[in-house]
Length: 197
Length: 241
Image (cartoon, rainbow over all chains, first blue to last red; front, top):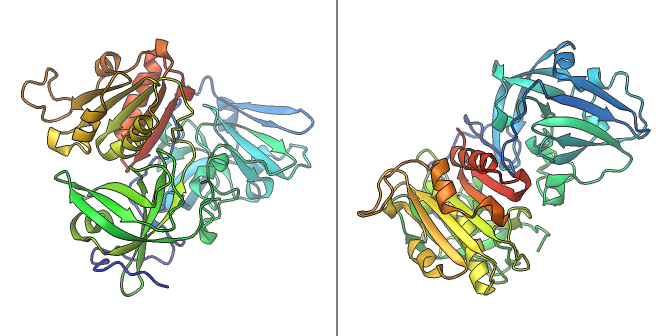
């Protein structure tokens, strides 16, 4: 049964076929965070990949900057229903970072400064689908938006693009991260509206 | 309460203009499963031609009932909030989905001191938590700091005043216009305000901060600078910048 809200709709926004279902367009860049914004100096920053054998591969900020840097033009979609179209980022592809990583695990736990985690299947991080991003619209990434660097995996809802990214740990199973334990979907495909449990 | 079912039909039972910009809406949602203090919901409006819009709102009510209370601030360029604040009337129908979020919540099994800090309409989930604290006759030490532009912009001012007792303290910050005789001049919240009017680090409080992004960023940063552990600070932000 359809439920109509009497008189609603006079202020509607232009509908946009590029938007996933249930999303609206924003020119702002809202913030979804569960706690204070960590402040991390790039001199102290590092990023590590830890495999099931215990092998840890670590990059400092300068080592990350020495890798091939890509320009990324993409739409982003937050579970809180805003979307931004045509955003511009710069970052290092996860394909580059995983090039010499030896793992047979199919899942990852992305870990952030501040202790937050989110789970992403490894295949969603490879083949040109994910980056460690440190510039947004030509400027260094603001701390409240995840700077100095965040994961960028824009084909999933944006909570998967972990702010203040610090490392990736390989997992044999798809274990839930922080947001996933607190009500958000395990995978988070915006085109299928996989928002919640 | 954890499972989010589909869309539930709600009927507006009451709509009260309580601030120049905002309204309290009370919805009857017969299938509402109840909610924890601090949770939110998605609200969906459908126009007669099928057009839909969905937004998230914090819930001011808590517990097992099927009455759901929201407080909605009007965003000048919004499409949903002006309808809810200006147009909707008792008897009108809409849909809700939830409750959502299991992190920014308070349960009456919690016994530690709690500091609540609200900016503007960020009071809504904190009112829910304050009501739950009262309803449980909890003796956990609570203190609330509420920042508003001017006295008339405050939601729930009289109810909050009535909650004040040995285990609930209430402090105000006015950013543009303070009441006559109020000791502090109108200004944005500062480190000195937080030092003077919130539970100290020594109490190891759990701190809940809710408000516009800029407010929450500023407050959370001051709390960390004062020595509150980041993991003891829960935040909920709304709006862009």
